[in-house]
Length: 141
Image (cartoon, rainbow, N blue to C red; front, top):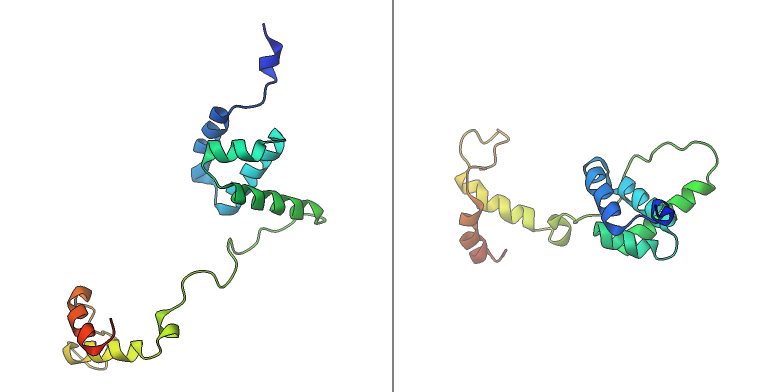
């Protein structure tokens, strides 16, 4: 029996198999942490092997290693953070880029608004593709 194979490093297939099983259970932060632990356990070249096996970016795995290093320097148990991502990410509202957009859309919807004018219903039954010719004439799109 070959004892070298018993203690051999896990192959890319083994890492991929573990990742397939764990993936539905992991959020972004846990996925980075798991990949970082795997890469650290493999040693030199571990980050590339984990990236190849899982399809995760090496940048993602490096971020996980940095998060593990920061967590290791903190003293005592840590509560999980409330947010997965930093504040301010994502797409900004279009009304910030064009302050007149909301008023222009309201003028398009206002003439065809059904029902009680005091209700909160703002013409949601109107299909957006039909707005495009009207918006083009008004200079919105």
